[in-house]
Structure formats: C-alpha cells, structure tokens
Image 1 (spheres, rainbow, N blue to C red):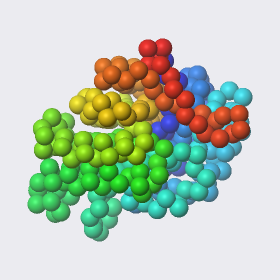
Image 2 (cartoon, rainbow, N blue to C red; image 1 turned 90 degrees about the vertical axis):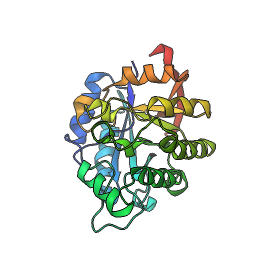
Image 3 (cartoon, helix red, strand yellow; image 1 turned 30 degrees about the vertical axis):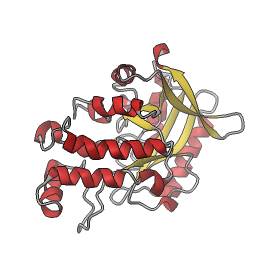
Image 4 (spheres, rainbow, N blue to C red; image 1 turned 120 degrees about the horizontal axis):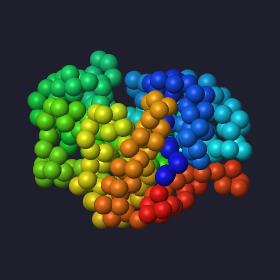
Length: 273
C-alpha cells in the first residue's frame, strides 16, 4: 500500500480535524510521509504563522516515526508571497478569472457553478470550462508549484448536472492543450482521490481519458487523498493505483526530507504497492 499523502486539510482551513488529530491517525495507519497542505486562496486562507507553528511542532514530535512536510495548496489567483517557507506547493485552480462580488469557486455548490456559467459565459458551460483550462495552463507560471492539484476540478458537479460531455472534443481539447503545456514545463500532476473518497464523483481527477493522455505526454504523477477528514487519509488509494497502471504508468512519486533536511522526490514502482 502507498503510505504517503501530500494533500491534507485540517481545521486550520476547511478540514474537520485538528492537525494533531490528523497526525495521530496517520501515525496509527503507519503512514510514512504526511504532507499538510492548507488552503491559501481568495475564499479560504489560513493564518500562515499559526499554520507554520502547528506543523513545525508536529514535525518535531513525530520525527523518529513519520516524515511530516509543511506544504500548501495555493490557488492560481492568490499571491505566492502568502506562504513563505512552504516545503512544497500544490498548484490548484478553484476560481475563474472573472469579477464577482464574493469569491465563487467551481467546486463550491451546483448553484454557484450555474451562476458563474450564466452570468459570465452566457450559460455556455463549454466556454466556462475552456476559460478554466486556459487559466489552469498558467498555474505553474503563477505559483511555481511542486505538482498540479485536481486538474479537472471544473467537472466537480458534472456527475449530477451533466452540463459537459467529458469525452467530447469540445471539452477535452482545451484540457489536453493545458495539460500538454504543463507537462512541457516539467510539473507533475496528482491523481486526486478526494471526490471519489467522499462519494462525490465516480471518477478520480484526472478522469481516465486525461490520465492516459498525461502518460502519453510523458507526465509524472503523485497520488493523494485530498483528505478533509482524518478517516479518509488513504481513501481510494487502491483505485488510484489501479487507474495509474491502466493508464500506462509504472511508478508514482513521493516527497520526503533527505539527509540534509531538504525535500526531494523519489519514485516508487506501482506494482509493489
């Protein structure tokens, strides 16, 4: 089993459990590498000094049993200067580059998604998704992220709303263009188990067509649970490993502190998990 997760939320942002409770559960599960990744975005942003203090204390407490990393999930439209000292960055796109009275993310509620589509894209969800992927293509340039978070988050409500045909050229074209560009910049992608983990979608992010394309482009992967509850730290990992193998991947990346204390990436063979 893969005993590493780098997409983890706590009560310091929008998670259900304290960092201490999450770390204790990870230790109980035998997790070897635990990355915290609190949100910093236009809607949800932590008190960064408090986050640093909490995660630093856990790193010291568990140093002999578990490698804890202090990461951040940084939104495409947020200031990278907000998180000094982050050991890794998840580059995520939750918001569109449109003017709204209050922050409106594509994964908040179906009603908010509809409002974004009708007020800013004339009700055309394909135009909305194209704008999303055009912005997503900039996420590495804007954030210098370690890896890409939930690449196709724009489909969060599509299982129920059916506003997009996710297998159509009209949808996949802009997505593939953004993906190919990001791969050319050398940035890996995560297989994000969050929506499946919480029973919100049938498919992982990225969906199978996109995951196969990612392999074809020569991309690299991480596997993360996007856990907002400590019970879901390893949720859907078996499904993610199987999806990665089916798409042609032979290994997954993990992050860890090396002997000098710096964070570096290593590879694990998928057929050993």
